[in-house]
Image (cartoon, rainbow, N blue to C red; front, side):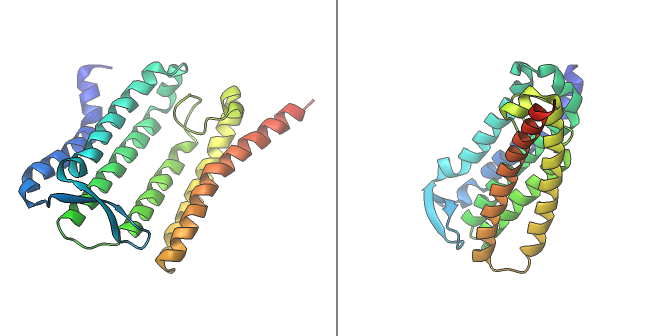
Length: 220
């Protein structure tokens, strides 16, 4: 890829990486010496850290993730497959970088005294991220770093494709359900349902890939 094309492609990610440092520079003297970094399920702040760590930790981690995402297609034994889902990979990268940007903004707003239901915001951010992922899961091709990587999906392109198409539909449908019910139930119940939701979207596709493997093995 030419340098111009690379820079053009990376502009959205680079902007999201720069924004936190601009905010830190502009509001540095407005931030308190102790920065909130963790909230209880009830929405109460239960952990603080010093100003430097509290403000720079997430932007620093985001840069590490960004560099890691650039490196993975170069070291993956199935690197040639990344060209087959380059658009999907770009969307997944931007989604994760954007997720951490929003987490940083939550910390900034809380530090500056703005009140919000942090637990609810984080739950919805996560659900939206999985909703986006779900729309692109079916387009991922076999690789060792991105997607549902079980022994059964990695050994069979057919099982990989079927598992990821199934997972994509599952993630999208359950995410829409979560968004809808979150509007009508209290936070304590939503938190429980949220963890059930995470368990389902994480485990069910793995079980599904094993079922496909067993079926394929039993075919004469």
